[in-house]
Image (cartoon, rainbow, N blue to C red; front, side, top):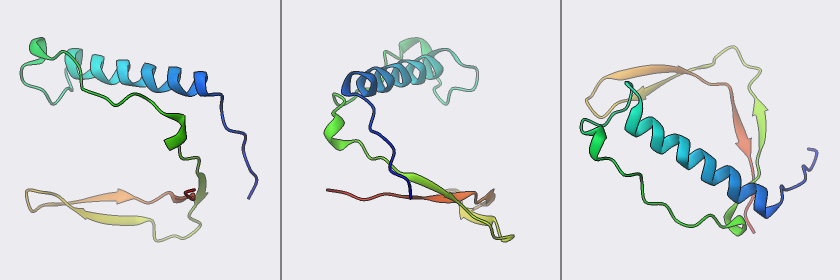
Length: 92
């Protein structure tokens, strides 16, 4: 597998912060938000981004024709999803 360069720490932190802003806006403003009292939502509490905990993974696509997986839901029902692949990564 080809090694990819890690992004710069500043880029990593900026990307994480932007994604968090977008998520908070979705929860507060979207008609698809799971929140009932959106007006009171002030944002989620997050840990400060730390590039030391960043995990870089490679995606490996499945080439199998058996690509469906049934997932049990908390209400006892089952939903079927498509499997596309898996991530390969390691820890220090």
